[in-house]
Length: 175
Image (cartoon, rainbow, N blue to C red; front, side):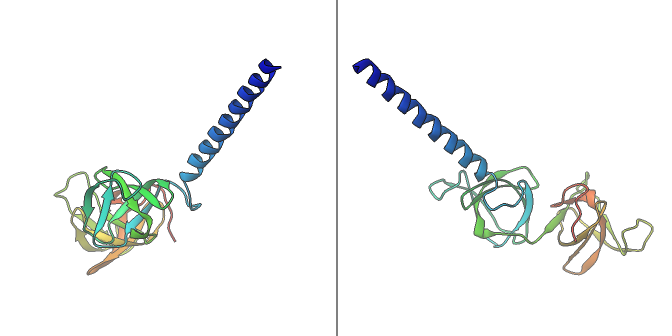
């Protein structure tokens, strides 16, 4: 009888551990998109001072601080109220969700950092050039067709080939 009780206890413990493991796995899967929005996705910094931490809580040290409001970052993971973000240089860290905005912005990114990116009046390379933008110029994304994006910023508004921006995905359409 004692042997039967021991085996039943072992079975109960194994079943409980199995359930706990399954619940943990389900929670981890849900944490990849805790708010129902897709991951990855682009967002922008809401504040002009955003602490980036080594992990998803305030117990982790601040690894660096972003100081450019509106900077686009890509959310690569979510855990509770924390978002792991990646910037245009590939650096990753954790940011508290309230410091991020769904407002879409993008920075000009060309292969050669000294080149100027022409901004066109229409989504057509034959249309008049309205401005020449330097590498790193930040703009608000108004529309993207999948190949062209309309962006605006301090003193400019026009269309730029989508592949010259960081903050939008290739072929992404934004209305």
